[in-house]
Image (cartoon, rainbow, N blue to C red; front, top):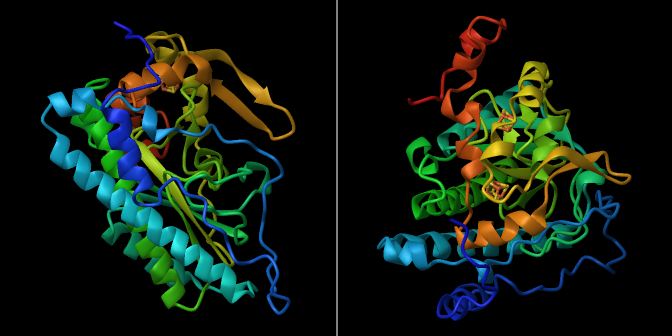
Length: 345
Ligand code: SF4
Ligand code: SF4
């Protein structure tokens, strides 16, 4: 049953505000890259794409408290805040240094990046040049205003069983946990890249520096689903994304685009039927000038999303989560046999 949308969350509003304001989470600190004449920065910047800003003050949180998960929630928030602070601080340092000429990266370097990513718990890594059309105007979380020209897109899996409980609090908490873990891992991988002499900017998974699913699509890591989420062979839509913008070049070659997933998605429509508030559009709206399709009616989705702390019903409903790529396609594609099945049931 859909509960009434309450912008004022009673007790939880002030608690959330305390958690985020005390840490500077919501503050917009000034970047110091605007005037120094010796700096040579040719960063990629937004062409005007607006982000849908998630307001953390509006999450309900009562179900999580009732579920006795307060301690986990506080730990997750603390780690999230620390990872955002580090990303912001490092970004300011990067920009203050100036000079962003491309730096030569060989295959051994990219192999080392992938190995390090795996060691940090990052499940998939893709590569694509940063597309200015999908950079957001305003990054409310990380304060990023410009990016280096090459993108390393990162995905981390959320736990199958926990997401399968959506919209119960376990699912929302798992989403927050992975945002937090991926934020920390993104920072560490960014440090690793810098330690090899390349310039790098961490785009936190909760930030609005760039539209991550669009970058993942440009890297041919999977396919954009009708639920507005990015779907991969490995994890279906059960993952969170982040990115590192770097000067390291050239990027590794992209894999083949998995067009069979897009075709399946066009005919499926399970997420459209499962959304409790009818927020998934039958036909996505085109965003003028940006070659981006808007799948979700946010006016319908967001009240439910806040009330159920992240919802996730449209992840749970997706066959690429429930069954997995291998069971959907069997031997129908030459790639199916080589992809590990993420399905559990
Ligand atoms: S998050 Fe929930 S409310 Fe929003 S589109 Fe998905 S199923 Fe619908
Ligand atoms: S549920 Fe079906 S239509 Fe929706 S994203 Fe998944 S495959 Fe596509």
